[in-house]
Image 1 (cartoon, rainbow, N blue to C red):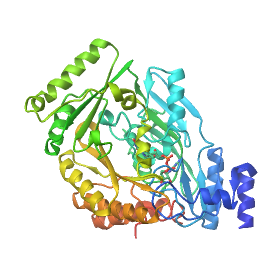
Image 2: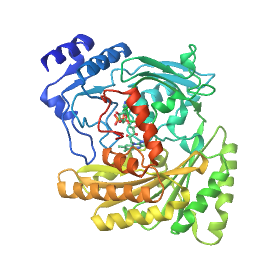
Image 3: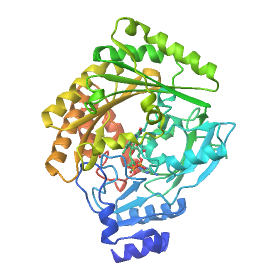
Image 4: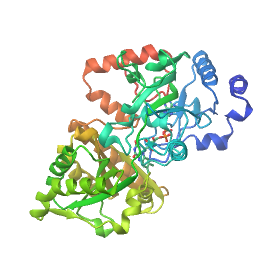
Length: 459
Ligand SMILES: Cc1cc2nc3c(=O)[nH]c(=O)nc-3n(C[C@H](O)[C@H](O)[C@H](O)COP(=O)(O)OP(=O)(O)OC[C@H]3O[C@@H](n4cnc5c(N)ncnc54)[C@H](O)[C@@H]3O)c2cc1C
């Protein structure tokens, strides 16, 4: 261990490595309900070459490496299940390029969402990226590694669909460029018309390589953002309402949420509809289109628009800080969510399941669904809050989440950012030949099995 520490110090310098117990304690856990596990070292590299050398060392010594952004994915994805090195990417946080005309940015693998947002506001106010509602300290590379979703996902798909090129350190130490940067200096395309190799790294939760640079699509930042809130107590109508709204092809984001607290929101389904424009005229035109799309439900008295003046600032905030406030409702500051990707037409069954689970396990829920890519699917978030000082409550939340994943799989959904047990459940259900293909890819890319082991382990 002493030799390995010395080698790591030689690669990244003394300030970039630690094995002190206090630091290891901190890096052994995440904010969710899974058991912590200690790493042996934490390393914070500053360059791709340093990462390459650490990976080469880990290969020689067969030491696990867990890439980590901000550790906020909540499902234990950065808990070093088999010890080894946690590689904290935060010191690689440069914004390397913005091509304003081609609307893309290139960032280092530890750049946070907040940094890119602030940089664009200051230097390219006409441009924006698809910001998730996660804390602004969370990283862009991690978000695409887990197929995250953000404010522009309704229009343009998963944030990982917005990648325009990658630089990756492979588990065997080679530095590899994916997409147009493999042919020249431009980062405009991750795949077409080449075979799209980005799929070897997006969604793999850091098990097939370390993303050291990410190219990301940027989009027009319109001058005005607006929000409408449509409310119905008819869960059976939600899918149809979403269908009508997505038909408009002009909304920024659509979220459906329901929660028992505060009482004001109980027993209703709230559809938050975001839209943007450069002029008041454009906004009013879009508002009229939105109203027209759901007029039938207003006429039948099955729903209506709720005045949002009292909560407009909260709704328009990006990211929405209020989401984390849910963690403090039962006191003790914890929440975790499972977020299956599924069909919008299954909304009523998922909604019923959340309420059933909350009653069965005596836990507090809040649920929301984000429409993806014009309605081809949605991310249905099943969130339960817990008190960190109450292990029994945490155990109940864990059971409820496991049951939610089993339900999502039964319903033909795909678990999102699944923890290692949910990954096993998913692999068990998967078509055997698909599973075999996953195994072939993984064993070829990572023959020593050092990358984030315990995750996506295909036997
Ligand atoms: C209040 C709240 C709201 C949230 N809202 C959203 C939301 O709207 N949309 C959304 O998508 N998510 C959301 N999340 C979930 C999560 O925080 C985000 O997905 C976030 O992007 C995770 O980033 P991170 O840097 O914390 O990732 P981490 O937890 O550090 O890492 C996530 C995964 O990526 C891997 N990884 C990290 N860096 C790299 C790298 N450079 N190369 C390869 N693999 C890497 C890790 O090994 C791990 O498997 C929310 C979370 C909270 C707490």
